[in-house]
Length: 355
Image (tube, rainbow, N blue to C red; front, side, top):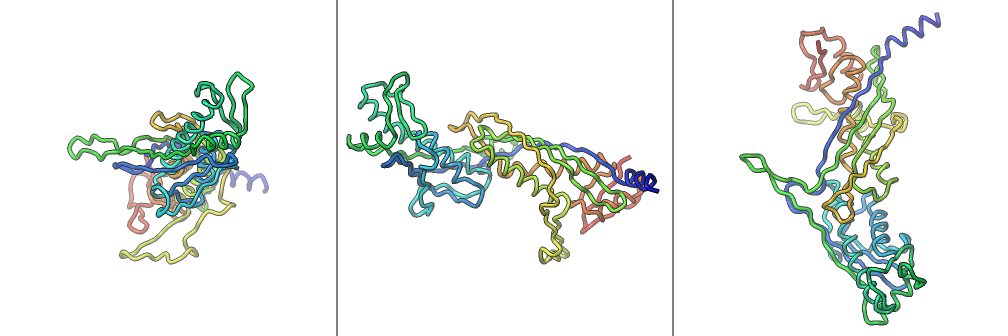
């Protein structure tokens, strides 16, 4: 009996793998995007950065602290990101379009470089050494190949003692154009990111349930500023894509939503999240001072089609209505091959069997 049960279970559960690839444009579409920032190397070797950036949980403040620290030679913990009230700070625009690292990160980098240049000019004169021989890192400044070295705090005191406040201001611009109405030519974005994901699923042909066993996600992010943050963004996008593919369904009838709350709108929980394997590809962007691009929204794009392709690989049924709920999968499996009326859900096709 146990052997028969095991054989039956193996027959009803089908595994498959699917792949999907994507591209995504960074920053605002078909227009000029811009962002500005101020930076100052302050007393004690601390850094002040002011920009109108909006932190909504994506980790941009950490990224900006890293950028300012690297560009000025300070320690990340010595960087303060100032008030983002747009009445008192340069324009940075919205948190969207996967533009935060690319737009605000580059403006902060350029402003920090300007502040560092002012500091280096004064210290080079103080030490009577060429400016390009100076290096700064982890709160210290020194002359390469010599014993001349001091803290960034001491350097700022010397700089201000010479009557100079090391400050910088900069803006970064991404150029885009709309598509020509006749020949379709244009450049909607200045830079692009690319990604590929592979999904492995198991489909229960008796119940229609789909379990995602694993996701392999490889994404080009340009230069990776914060690897842990990038992995978090990829994992979050994959979970969103899983919900779109298998669970989240907003039903409208006659133009009115009938899904009134989350009691019927199913979201992925921790128990639904598979093993996510992140592969970070660093194809550095030549149009960016930081050589970085972005990863916010692009991580979501290939997940759903990869899962749909995996379902097709497992059971030979092409699902064309999202989400691919158990009811839709069972209905598609019961359709006669090569013909018969197609079952629809909310005026959308549930799927079809290919011959």
